[in-house]
Amino acid sequence: IVRSATVSVKEDVGRALSGPADGAAVPERVLALWVPGDTPVAYDSGPAFLLPANTDLILRVHYKKTWENERLAMTDRSSVGLYFAPATATELRALAVSPQASQTLTEDLEVVAMYPDSGLANVDVEVTAQRPDGTRAELIRFRPQADWARRYWFAEPVRLPRGTTISVAAAFHDVLLPPGAAPFALKRPDPAAVRLTLNVIGGQ
Image (cartoon, rainbow, N blue to C red; front, side, top):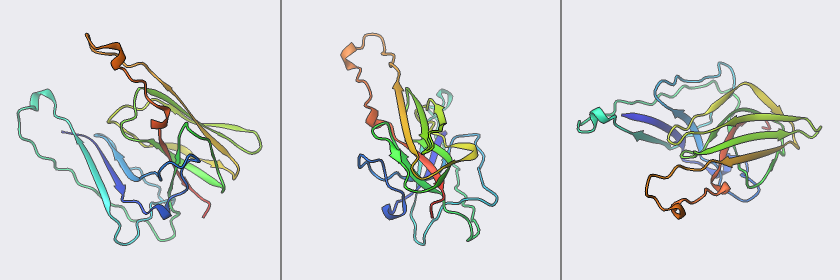
């Protein structure tokens, strides 16, 4: 009955990097995005999330029964495991990006992962980085699925020096309406609704 789950931190805004230039809210710091079949992703000697004493964790679970079980009472047996890193581990931080405004880095960073806000769907997203020397890196191109938010880990960290500009492009797809629905009932999504979070290390 568990379709997906998210474990996040009740954020202290002072710990996150700056949000987009438009003044958007600081991104929620997500520890884990999980769907059935996923296995933990760990860096043996790399970065880790910092959880100060008395940190509150937020667990959100999305349930959906299959049609065979609609009338059955069911229980959730899920559990959450925390893996503790050595004190020498590098902190893994969050950097919010969106199509509304390009983000220019004020420090040297390495991008190790990316995830979209939950619920984002029917849109093709492309994230690119323009380095100060003019070289361009396509970080990721993907189409997220509603209620199946995933964290995408890069095979290798992408090094981005200070002065790199990160841009997000979003192309929305038309949504098929059910028969008999009024055409004016379809409201095209606002690009401002597209929010992504990059997990980065460095710049400490």
